Amino acid sequence: MTWEGPAVGTEAAVSCKGFRFPAEIISHAVWLCHRFPLSFREVEELLLARGIVVSHETIRAWCDRFGPEYAAALRCRRPQAGDKWHLDEVFVKINGERTYLWRAVDQDGNVLDVLVQPRRDAKAARRFMAKLMEKQCRVPRVLVTDRLCSYGVAHRELMSSVEHRSHKGLNNRAENSHQPTRQRERAMKGFRSAGRTQQFLSVFSQISPHFRPRR
Image (cartoon, rainbow, N blue to C red; front, side):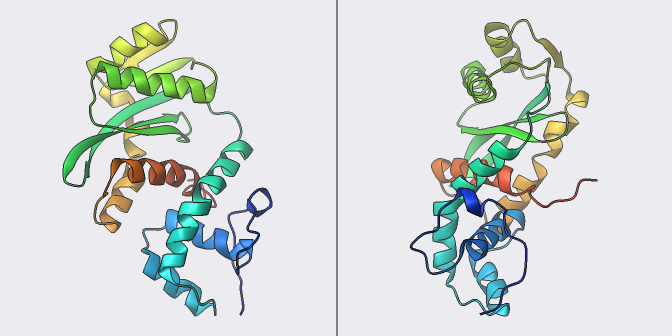
C-alpha cells in the first residue's frame, strides 16, 4: 500500500486506535469528502488509485465518526474571529420541505456558525443569535444583516449596544458564503433530514476551507 498526499493535520488530536488504516489516510478521506463535491464512491476510487482498498460505506462511517472531531480540532487552532459579523439565511429543501439555513461569517469570510431551522421569524433569529453569542463568548462590534425584520427584533433584545447595519447590498460576504453549500446540495442530490444536514454543514464549514488558498 502506497500513500502520498496531505492529511487534515489534526491526527494528533484525534485517536484512531483500533482502526485498520492510519490516521493520515482516514483524515485525508474525510477531507476529500468535505472539500470537494465528491460522493463516497468517488472517494473510494481516488483512494484505490493510490493502492488503498476501502469501501465507500467505510468512508461514510469515517466521516460520521471523525468529521466532528476534526472540525472541532481545526476550530480550536484558528485565531479569534473578526469583530464584524454578517448574518444571512437561505432556504434549503430537506426531504422536499422548505427549511432555512442560518449562517454567520466574519469580515474575512470565516464561518462562525450555522443553524438549520424550520422558520425565519423573530424566534428563530433570537435562537440563532443567542447560540452565536454563546459560541463566540462575546458580541461583535458591528452586525450586518439584510432587511429581514426578524433580525431587528433579535438585535434589540440580545445586543442592543451593537451597531446594526441592515442593508442587502452590505451583506454580500454572507450571501457568497452560501455558494459552497449549494454546490454540495446539488452533488448530494438534496438533503434528507434536518439533523443530518445540521451535522454535515457544521463539519463542512470547518473542514472545507482547510488547505484552500485565499484569493
